[in-house]
Amino acid sequence: MTDTNWQPDLDSHPGPKYLALTRALREAIRLGELAPGAQLPTVRDLAWRLHVTPGTVSRAYQLATQEGLLAATVGRGTFVAARAPRLGPTQALFQERDLSDEPWLVDLRSPQLPDVGQGAAFSGALQKIGQGLDAAWHDYPSQRGEAPLRAAICEWLSDRLLGAFGPEDIALTHGGQNALLLVFLCCLRGDRPVILTEDLAYPGIRHAARLVRADVVGVEIDDEGMLPDALEAACRRHGAQILVLTPEAQNPTACRMGAARRAEIAAIARRYDLQIIEDDCYSITESNLPTLHAIAPERTWYVGSMSKSVSAALRFGYVVCPSGMGEAGRLTAQHGFFALARPVSDLALELLESGAAQEIRRKVQEVFASRLMTAVNALGRFDIRWQAGLPFLWVPLPSGWRASTFARQAEAEGVLIRQADEYALIHGRAPHALRIALAGAIPADRYASAVATLARLLGHPPSDMAV
Image (cartoon, rainbow, N blue to C red):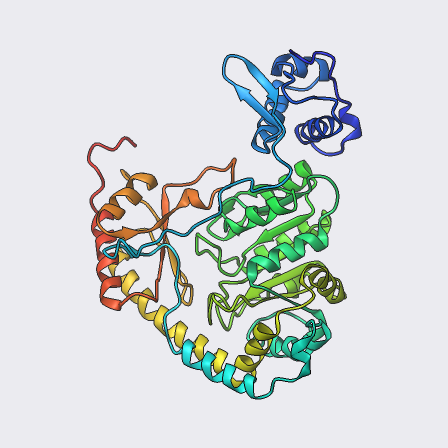
């Protein structure tokens, strides 16, 4: 039956009308005012009664449907969804494609680190750690015990223009993804908070946002990153609390934000009281530009990890918190997992203090520099975007190619790549482009052959492709 009497008071929910209606739907379902199976008013009927546009109601219905609150049936209408079990997964567990049965495929989807002696370095470090085990290894780890590692991270970041910071400003995490979640937990408030990010962005942002029940809104970018005018418009429209962006090495477009643009972004964040997460996990060493943390130290959370430079298996990351917020960041970490596991923290400390981590990073950069030269030489006649030190390229496709068609054809010829729509947000539009990783874990000759295959495909788009 249609619940014709349901008419929410949107004035009691701040923010844009479509978000207010989404919140009202969520609240009515939670309180039992709208029972499972109840049919909702039509879009036009509810729009007329609430004095809003049909587009406002349609957008709210769409968001609530994506959350699983509503179910839409063509020809019948929109209904409150049946209640799902309180426990259990809401989506399938992500499983990376297993290529062991497909050895002919060359995987250029992710920039796997080359083997430059990590195993030997880790083995030596663990043997040294094992010689000094004491009673502290029988107890819970503590934030106090991580102080030497935080000091080592300050030295690790000495090639970045971060402004004034010290060990007291750092919180340690289980990788960059965990660092994102830690900042979300530390900063977000209220029901369905809003996070702004680039409209092509690392998918982990939306996955972490889902865990804290936040909405993610994409902001338009150009060849220098996020557009200030688009950011300001999004701030006025959505009342966001956090801005996530990658000014140094944008993933996936490989663009870099200039100093003037960074200053503009920081000024807008101050004007609208946004907390900034500066994701620098693809850090390029010895940057000559000030970070957002240096420009806006009172609101910027600088996130990094060793996953892209030393070892992804280590699962070690860090957050340089805003001035005076280090204790808040560490408290959030403490509430989540006490502190890093001793094997992880002690290994990371030994690698940093011995110089092994710095030597591994240097060797990794050498391999990626060689792979980049191979890729640029093969693909240079096309419109490619790249940065020295960055382990991937961005390739807008020539006229005649669509990203999905190119990806299928590339796989048919033995090469796996990521297409742009894997980085687009739910409501975003993706260009016909692809990201090519400078995969360091495969032999150089196989890598060169795979890049040559992509160059050949790029130069021969399908003759019957509609454009």
